[in-house]
Length: 128
Image (cartoon, rainbow, N blue to C red; front, side):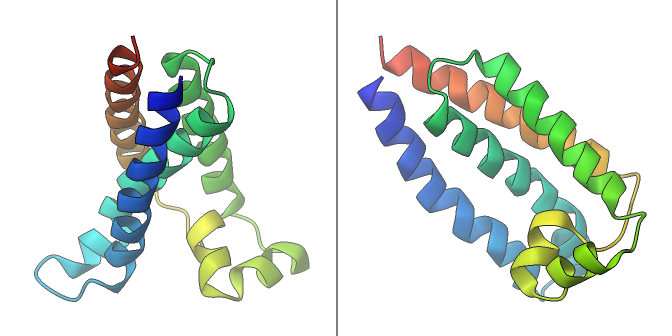
């Protein structure tokens, strides 16, 4: 399990800045990169966090759990209340819970969780 934790940390060090970079990208397809592709990195990030904390949990459970939780967060974007507005008032809050509901985000969440699932499987195989 030590290798898995090490690879998870290294992956988080790589994935986290890439995810944030999608929010600041200004080149070709910038709107897609900023608003959609970032969802893939968002899911991978959360799957890696859960792997780091719950290293013995099955990869499929991590991926499904993260997909479900982030899907619920996506639906919270349909609501506006003072508590959510305070969270969304800064960059990190908007990055974590989002600010606008878009059905297509679920596709990117699915791809991110699928990529994370296979990534985790590779980690676990290397630890044997």
